[in-house]
Image (cartoon, rainbow, N blue to C red):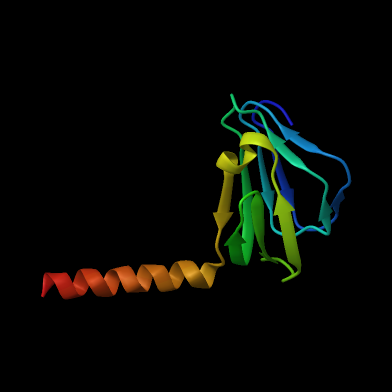
Length: 109
């Protein structure tokens, strides 16, 4: 993927390798298999995983896809890890926002 191209993936396979250059972004809501993801270190490319129950390892992440709840285990090569963004499920974001508002309200009293 080059320039400002964007990929939204909800299911399916990437059997070989997905390479991102320049400002390309890829958003994964679900997938059956992804062979390998590589992001050019000189790019501002970003890989977004929409997932729940995410855990970070030394070389990748594990979790469940947001679209179908299917488990995944993803390893990254090179500096790709620094271009990965995990987007939590909406419920987690709502609970975080409510907790922040409660703390702010308590401070204002």
